[in-house]
Image (cartoon, rainbow, N blue to C red):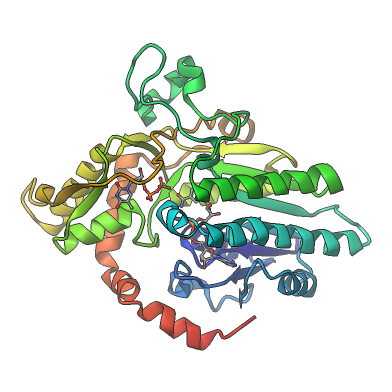
Length: 377
Ligand code: NAD
Ligand code: TYD
C-alpha cells in the first residue's frame, strides 16, 4: 500500500535508525524526514539512504505552525512518527524554555496541522495515525530498593521472567506521571496534548514510552558515546554523584523495530512501554564500557579505570528508571533481539571504527556544512 509518512527528528539519534528502517523496508512508502538540524541533528547519519527515491529531507521547525501546515498538506501526509525533540536532561536544566518551545509547542503545532489537514480529507481520520515517541522519564523515578529491601537492579535479560513479583518497582503504562526534570516535564506535557487530541477531536494517536537507548550515531553528550570517546582520548570520565543511579538500556535498532511494529499493528489510543529488562547501575555500566574499549584498543585490562572522576551530581538526578514492557511483548510479540553484551560490543566497535563521524561532531564541522546546504524549508 502507498503511504506518505512524515518522520520528525529523523536526523537525530533514534530518528535516523527509524528513517533507515522505513526507507529500506517499505519502498512503496514516501518517507519525509523533517528536522530543524539543531546541534543534535546530523545528516551524515543518513548518508547511506539520502539518494533513495522514496526519501525526502526537509529542513524545518516543528514549532512553526504555518510550515507544518505546508508540509503536511503539500505531501498529503497520512502517518506521522514524531521524534523531534530537545532530548538532553543537562541542557534542559540550563535552558528549560527551549524544551518547552520544541517539545510542547512543537508537538502542539504538529498535532494542529495534522488535525486541520486530516479533517479536510473526504475520508477524514480513516487510515491516519499520529504516533508520538516519548520517554520513561515522564513517570518520575523509582527507588533503589524494593519493599523487601532488595537492591536494584532487579532485572537483567536472565531474570526478565521473574520481575512480576516486584510489581510497583517498574513503570507500567498505568503508572501516574510524575516528571522531575524540565526535559521530562516537557515530554509529559506533549504526551498529554497528544492524548487530548484523541479524546477531544477523535484523532487516531498512539504514545510509546521507551527506556534509555544506546547504539551508533548518538550525540556524544550522552553517557555512552561521551565515555567511549573520552576513554579513547585519555580524558576524564565525569561520573555524576556516586554513580549509583540505575538506567534501563535498550539497543536503538530494537527500539526502531518496536516503532515499526507499533506503527503498523498497535491499537489506536493505546500506550505501550518499550524496554528490554536491562537495568544497570551507572558505575557498573561505565566499568563494562572501559573494559570493552580497552580490550578493543589492545590496552591491558584496567588501563583506563583511573579516568573515572566523581563530579557534582546532576540537579534533581532521578535515581532509577525501569520499564515493564510485558504489554508490548504479549500483545504484539515484540522482544529485544540483542543481549546487552552483544549490543555494547557492537556499539563500542562502531564508535571506534567511525572516529571521523565523532571528530566531525566534536570539531563542529558537521553543523557548518549543512547550514550552507539547507538554508530553509
Ligand atoms: P536527539 O536529540 O538525538 O535528536 C532530536 C532530533 O530532533 C535532532 O535531529 C534535532 O535536530 C531535531 N529537532 C530538535 N528540535 C527540533 C525542532 N524544533 N523542529 C524539528 N526538529 C527538531 O534525540 P533522540 O535521542 O534521537 O530522541 C528522539 C526522541 O525519542 C525524542 O522525542 C526523545 O524524547 C525520545 N526518547 C529518547 C530516548 C533516548 O534514550 N535517547 C529514550 C526514550 C525516548
Ligand atoms: P544520559 O545519557 O544523559 O541519559 P538520561 O539522563 O536521559 O538517563 O545519562 C545517563 C546516566 O548517566 C544518568 O544517570 C546521568 C549519568 N551521567 C553521568 O554520570 N555522567 C555524564 O557525563 C553523563 C552525560 C551522564
